[in-house]
Image (cartoon, rainbow, N blue to C red):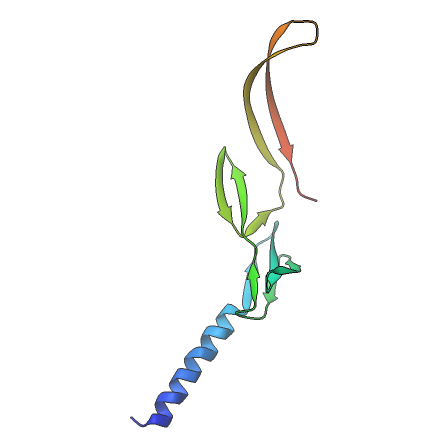
Length: 108
């Protein structure tokens, strides 16, 4: 195998990797925040999106689901429920009560 064939295979492999990294598929009711060299560039909506490989990167965020915090790059645009634990509070007129709450969150 000659040096030219080896170089052609290496360039073909690099081109294939660049092609795969340039295509992003975003599911319905999700979006991805893209950064170009560390600053905001665009918001990818649902469907097929083409980005510049190795320069555009998705912004990592921390998402809360079912009381668990996990890092992800996809933002869920659907309405989510955040259950807040029961808390004992004292009112202005010194009455002790406990509060339980649900928080409905939707990104717009």
